[in-house]
Image (cartoon, rainbow over all chains, first blue to last red; front, side, top):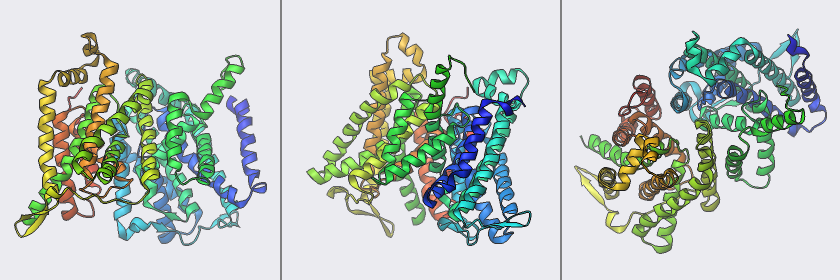
Length: 323
Length: 286
């Protein structure tokens, strides 16, 4: 575990501490925005396991995010009011849907993969939108009361934005640490290898489809996990969370931050929400700016914010790449 | 029986619009290898511009002629300054670039014309209704159904007999070979992209009196035309025609026979086709 003592580890640890202390220094308004940023970061990073590492552009990632949201809302209304039930059920929901849908999708690649994932995502959207008796149709499912979270008999009030922020930060950090372990493992290298040259991977005796399916399922589970938090955050699970344009958000945030750097999507999410916050305070036409920013990024900075910074600093370090 | 016929007519008129959009999409993909997310937005622009022109000069027909041309000019600018730098890059980045253009255009339209939906009246000649058994049917939709094959035949003749049509087909079949025998790719690309945009603009101008014109119509049609192009076979012209008809009819029959599933039907069809014939009905399996 050399990685534990590396420079990156300390930087990550420092960022985590700062994030944990943030609610003491900023207003409740910003605590809420920060909560949304960290939840959406996990969503974007789950997408990037497929896009940046495995080379698969999914336009259906919101489907699994939405499954997590709906499954947790349903669990809370029908099954249990405990956070310890609702979170795992949401993750398993995302995992199972990703396993089944992924089994079909990994047969294709490139544009065909993108279109097929979009199709399956939209099937899930239709299911949420039209299955009125279970999902509440276009109104969605409201979460009347927040789940009970008790740690060692100590009850944590999730109604309080600060406590919800800390819980989200903990869950998302665990998710990100898990992702880190995945991409640094031999399996993670295999993912990168399938992205670079899938034919060679099959020549050395690996089943490309299985490798991709595992990545797809992991990404789906983590998206489901983010979905649970997002539903609790908004007190509702609604069909828009499964729409392809919501998947498009993950794509955007990832490109914004940089798909080639591990924490790129998280930085992209932060930049996305901060930009949105400032631009919408001047104009309602935020999408026109977003579109322009995306075009400029693709043309001039395809590595994204963090990717460009990382390249810049590694040049300063005399070409030594720190990650 | 009446219900059946009405469904067929509704399916055909929507299918014909889809066909126009998909033709452009599939030509651009076939020649340039770019799947254009912004294609639906060009369709939407065609609808808005023809609406605006119709208001200014109060002639539907002049709007129908000039709106697609204006859209094509805009497309030339997009191709020349935005798309050209990314041809050498990964497919994902081309998709993302056109996605950005789509966001920009969709919101730009909202900025100019507002978020409300606008109604456009068909020209007087086409504004009546036509008796179909005991019911009536708008003449304008019959006009659309007639326009589809008419434009289809013109395009077919263009691609089969004209020099430029042949060049485009040759480039779609084998770009490198076409370049070797002297086709100038940069100009061809600009022309093909403008041509696709012209078709999208024409579809939009024709669609304006058929449905209300609002900022979401591009986003709605782009996904359906993606499905058309994928199930027909990317780059295949007959595929676009057949795919558009299937999707049009699926929409109209689905709405009456399985209203709860109607929204999901195109996606289910997409999944079935992609999983059994990954390159589409008319596509060549590699």
